[in-house]
Amino acid sequence: MIKHFHGYHIAGLPFLLIDDLYENPRTEPLLVLGPPGIEERLWQMCAAFSYPGGDEHPYKVRIEELSTERERIAAGFRLRAYPAHHQPETHPHMVNLSHNGKAVFYTGDTGWHEALPECVGESDLFISECTLYESNFDYHMSHIELDRNRERFRCRRTVLTHLGSDVLLHLNKVRFDVAEDGLLIRV
Image 1: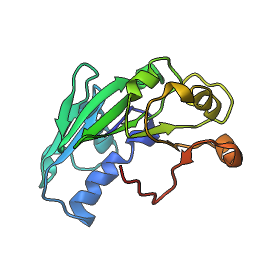
Image 2 (image 1 turned 180 degrees about the vertical axis):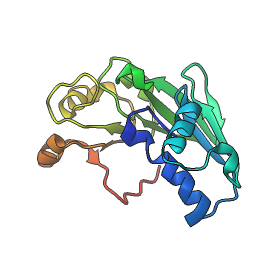
Image 3 (image 1 turned 90 degrees about the vertical axis):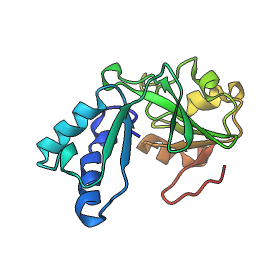
C-alpha cells in the first residue's frame, strides 16, 4: 500500500517487482493499492529504471486506487482511507485496517489536523508518524503536538514511527511507545 507519492514512499516498488520476477519468483497475484494515479506512476518508474512493465510479469499485478469516499475489502481486511495533512500534490492519505473486530490506524505522513482523533477513533493500535520532537512543520507530526492532544484520542495504544533526528535526540522524553526494526505487535 502506497500512502503518497514522495519518492522514499514509492520508489522501492519497482525493485519489489523485479525481486518478485528474478530473485524470489512469485506466482501469486500482487495487489498494489495507492492514491489516484498510482498505476501510471508505477509503470513510469519501471520504464525509467528499464524494468519490466505490467504485462511482462508471470504473475498478475493488480493496481487499484484508494478512495477516501468508501470502504473496501483487500486481502481480507476492511480498509478505509482518510485524507492526510501533507503536501497535497502527493495525494496523501491515512488508513484504517480492521479484521475480526481489531483495528489498526496508520497516519503515513501527516501534520496535525483537528479531524485526526476522530479518524483514529477507538482503534486498537494507532501508528503515528512522528518526524519532529517539538518544532512545528505543517506537514509532519511532532511529539509535542501528539502529547498535547493525547486525551482526545480514544485508541488503546499509540506507537510512533518515522522518527526524525530531532525525536531521536529526545527519546528519553518521548511519552509514547516507539517502533523499531523487527518490532512485533500483537493486536
